[in-house]
Image (tube, rainbow, N blue to C red; front, side, top):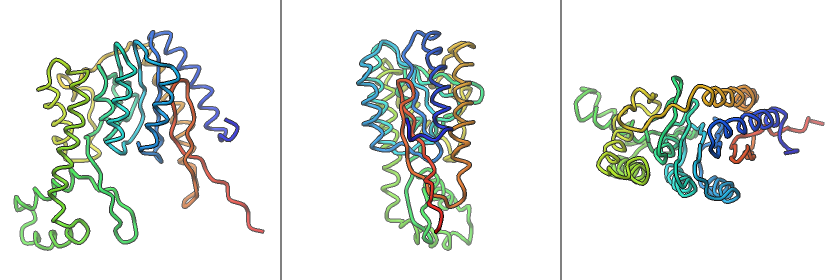
Length: 294
């Protein structure tokens, strides 16, 4: 705690009071899993999340508040599996604002998902990392396959050969079969999570929903709203009083943690920092103070 910047300390102190209120109203154990813009879901996170849950042990009802733009889908799958293990009766995934890409996969682990008018999930879309002109890019598998489809349908006309040459320079065409298998892999992960809880009695629907979340959307950044998910995921209303607390936690998160990271000077150095928040955990960054020149 002593090493946390003031903004992060302020967020922790204020948010933990609200988390206690939320637990009383909901009669549940609340686990916040919050990722700032500078952090993606990654392998080491599983250990820290598992440790948090080991400390409280299995609970009848878990509310998991998620804010994340995504990351490693395989590790998101493991996190979803861990959450399912510790929620003995009901697992509710609460999305105040964003749970995109791999974070949407975690949402598939729940018995139900709570969303408000501003909440959004995103396509479960694996990313390929490539270095192009000395810059690192995360390229959407869905976008690559959509581009291939456009070429096949003749959308580029006489420019098709040039487009193929440009693609092959950075994404060898011989790898495209692998990209197709990656999409099937993400479908399989979502299907397994959905079929264990939300669609335990209906594995066919689990596969239908998994395919829609992985294949339907043509943009990695597509916003999937609660109204888009009716009849697909089980969307629930947690009540106005509980939702107001969730939204107030979100506002504290934006005003303190996200704005703190947005204030980092261009080209500044920052480092990862994780800290406990109530019974859950925050994954964010802090500015590295550079020594002034002598």
